[in-house]
Every structure is written in structure tokens, then in C-alpha cells.
Image 1 (cartoon, rainbow, N blue to C red):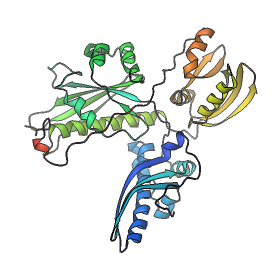
Image 2: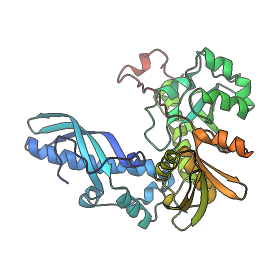
Image 3: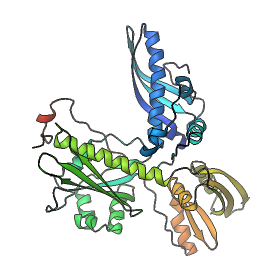
Length: 395
């Protein structure tokens, strides 16, 4: 694919299509001439972007099954790309690349290679980093001596299917959520606390030190409040690591587990299909247009057909992949309520669903939808690791 230093687009990119867009791919290529270096860099950058896309969509335990494509085959999956921050010198080309892939082509490669994948973007996941230095120590969250909280703050902004939200640790956090509430896994208090961040899906990430002096490991237990699932990972220290590096490595691996769990829940099941007819309550035509647009952004929905339209309701048939629980979860990520009421499925904009369902006398059990927010990334300095404040070497 031939590109220029200017951005070019074949069509507007929908929100769901952004799943198939990889940004900020660094290019640093050399060649006999600047032109050769540029061509080499753009080709390698697109191949590198495909690798990042694979890691975004495919759970880690299936990534070894990914197909090996030639450079030409990989670039054929690219829809278009844009370049920024171009710099050149004699025989060298540097830039940042944004690559937009053809969703249907990528899906076909993965599907016919037998590699499971997901593409539903989650609403933000609120992370509560709980630190317990030893089995006899008191667990802490809102403490200046919580290196586990600091480690999560060092991670780069999540670029996968699950946006990550960390707490501010301010007075409002302290008043809304006590350590006792977290240890008790009080879903009500956790939901109230998370709502200040526009998130009501929470993972409690508890870290503790295990092992003997000089052979320490960090044990991380993840508790997912929405599903009640608990997972554990043990990360051993490696020679020369600082405490900060060990905790940051543990946080990174813990987050990979979070992302894998989401992908597992939302894998596209091409061999499991279904159809459902549902009602959409309306107060105006714009209500149907809003729901229609959001349905088109749900990856599991292959297509939808409008069966009837009146002043106060629409009737629509959904053709989808997977089972009903997957469909409901995927629709929730697009701000759509999906409930069973009076022997019929009802679909609504989440903002209007509560009041309408209350009028109908139905309890809405679908989680309320958060607004994406992401922490600013920070990074350790490139040198002086053993002399940094808060980054001392392990004993």
C-alpha cells in the first residue's frame, strides 16, 4: 500500500471501527536513501500495527495460533493510514503512524485460521488496588504507603478492549469507600463509589508479598464484582529489580488477566447464532434513530430488520452471534438496555430506560453505563533506577 505524509480516508470511521485502528506506531527506519527508508518504515509500521491489533483482539493463550502472513498479505488488510511528526535525515526516516484496518478482512483471517477473538469494547473498568504487605499486615488502599497503587499509576493508558479507571485517592474517595467495604466486597458501596467515575464495573486487585527474603514474589488476587469471578497470578521477582519495577510488572500482568477475562466473555461464536424480536418504546422518531445507530455499533449483531414502526414503539428483529447473555452484555456497552418485560424483549437508550421501565413496573437489572475516562500515563525515568525516590532496590 502506498501512502503519503498526509492523512487520507476512504470513509468516516465509526466508533466501533476504532477497534480496528492502531495509533502512535513509532517508525525509525534506515535505507540507502531517505525514500528507501520511508518506504521500508511505512511497510514495517503497518505490519507492527497488525501485531498490536492481534494482541488487542485475541486472548493471550491463543496468540501462538495466529497465522503467519507475508508482508503483502498483512498490508492487504490495511484500509488506510496516516502519518504524523515526520522527520528525515540522510538515509533515515522517523514518524508516528496511525493504521486503520479493514474489519471484515481481519475477521476473515482470524475466523478461518481458527483463532478465537473478541471486538466488543467494554465500558471503563474501575480498579481498586489493595495492598497487604504480609499475612499479618492490615490491608490498605488510601495510604501514602501503598506502592501497589503507585504501580498501577505507572502503567500506560490501556489500549485494548477495556478502558482502565484508577481512583483519585482524594477526600471523596475516602468518604465513599472504606477498606472494610472492599474486604467485605460490598457491591452496593462499590457501585456507589464507582459511579463518581462514571463506572460501575469494578475489579478489586489485592497484592501481597510472599516468599522468603531475597526470593520474593507478589501474589495478586483479582475479584470481579460484576461476575463474582476471582483469579490469582503470582509474579516472582527477577535479579536487579527494584520494588517499584516488581510491583509495576505485577500490575501489568494483572491487567492482562482483566483483559483476557473480558475477551473470554465476549468471544465471537460464529457457530452459535440466534434471532430475537424486540420492542423499542418511543416518544419521538429520534428515539428510534438513536437506538438504530447504537445497534449498528454492537459487534455481535449481524444485522437488524425493522418490522413495524408506530408513534410510540418500533418492532425490530436482531440477528446475532453467541447467546442471549453475550448479546445483553454487548448491547450494554453501547448504552442499550435489554430487558424481558410482559413476554417481550424491550430495547432502550439507557438514559431513558429507567424512567420508562419504572412506569411499566419492571426492575432494570442491567448495569448502568459509565462514561469512558482514562488516567494520564507516567513512566519511570530511563536511568538511575536504584536512586529514585520510592524506587529503592529490594533487600
